[in-house]
Image 1 (cartoon, rainbow, N blue to C red):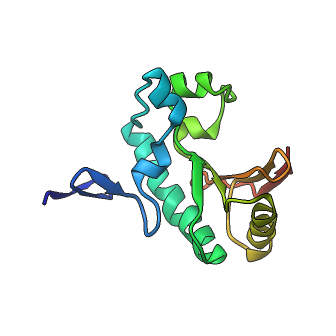
Image 2 (image 1 turned 90 degrees about the vertical axis):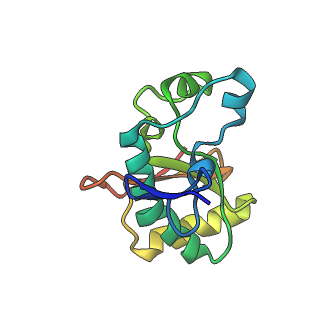
Length: 150
């Protein structure tokens, strides 16, 4: 078994654990990237920001929910972001955002309320497309606490 530290991220057999509940695989996986042959490997800076996102926001949200959450979209390289129609300034490009779901619109609605009421620090919390998923983001030292419905 190979164990080594890489920028604060523990590697075990090439499976990188970002935090308690989330792996780098979950935060970089993309069906679109796989179908189009896009290499969605994050930069060192994006990897570090993903680790902070997981530790400071995703893990606490998972504990608040009390059950597993699915990451629909985490880090996106520029080619992947363009392929999915992401905004040119998307926080996904920097490893600062993830789109998550409980698996149901009702669950997403409840989780949204829990996050708002929890006092957790975040940059953005966005209800996307009628509770289809939640966009959550974290910016080190610059969180705005923006709550939006799109």
